[in-house]
Amino acid sequence: GKEHRLTNTKDFAAVRSRGRSWADGLLVLGARRNSLDVSRVGFSVGKRNGNAVARNKLKRRLREAVHRIPLRDGFDLVLVARRGATSADFDGLCRSVEKLSERARITETTQGSSSHGAAG
Image (tube, rainbow, N blue to C red; front, side, top):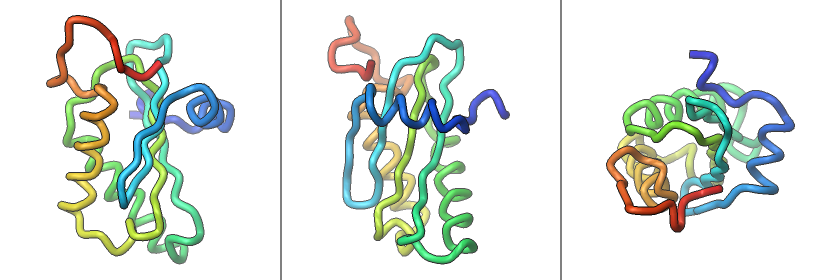
């Protein structure tokens, strides 16, 4: 739903400037704690990723990849597509999103005794 979308430019900027980030060959994940009961996700797919059709397709694929992982509540997330992301297959994008989320400790399956290492 709309409450799970990060759309405000200020929110994107806050994640980029005050959050933490993790990267692999396809994506960069920025994460920052928010004061909400939900996690919100935004996507940044620049013109280097192709024309509008290619960029929108990539955003749809990334949105679906995020839906497939159990995110913890209370985070603002920004996924930035790197140059090779457009040509990656869907399984590769899913693996990338999953691994970056685990590294950021924002998935439900990552249970620690403290928030050490968690974004925020």
